[in-house]
Length: 400
Image (cartoon, rainbow, N blue to C red; front, top):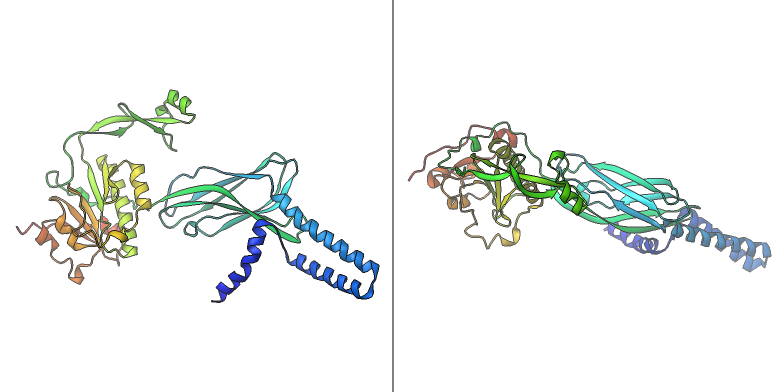
């Protein structure tokens, strides 16, 4: 209650500061002195007191106008943000351009990033020469996956006299893609021990993107792409580097991973499931050359960037929980990540499951015998990476 009251009291001053200027502490003191001088002058009729109060008022007016002028003519641009995984360092770069003929300085710059990305960061800019720019670069380490968008940068100054504060918000759109963490799996029995005839592994050669073969498509350049794959004619036409995706054939296997959005997930378990999906996808792509991701909202996705973006943005579909009975499942064998044991009954033959429902509750007991689908139950008291790499998962025959 106290915080709300303080915020309510500050709101008029914040509103005025964003549109004009408000006195700083020194400004309030000087304003009080000038009021005392004016009252004394009115009582004594002393001319010098009128002069002092007049000079003080003129100084206050000048101190109120100059910060507003200081913030004019400053433009901001933001460098593109490249995707990262949760826990990695995100580099943000802002450029402040002084488009006027006067030096701009003594500025406080604050990037209004979402709270989930990290604490609000601000910096002090001492001076920006006329027609020059100042580059501000800082780093954040987001701990949670997500697609974060914001567009506000705050400029604040009290220069040059420090008696009044003025601030302005500039629209500088920013979008950060934070992929889920990827566990470095060295082995994954639930994928490795899947038989080709009983699993989602495809036997027909599949054309997929590679770095050898004929040109399949063109896409924008991403950091790490080999320069030998640049299609220079298209790059000149579009004004940006375009990379050739080459077609190659593999006679290997395509692993399909499915994330159940219709289950009643505990938030922590759902985040673990997303991390597991990302880790299984990266492992399957490296080992088998291709992998797919399925959710009820996106359908079947292919391609590393598309899948990681989908996993960064995916949320529990709470609005449709009651409507999805029975749950939606893909029509091909998958590795099914769920918190609902009942959904396992609807899986296609040859599927596997990873469940976040404890068998000790009785809900998941005997699923292998009843459905003929074997899998792994994740326990919260053990590291997820260890459990995904463990050999101790059910491999029971169907009961018929």
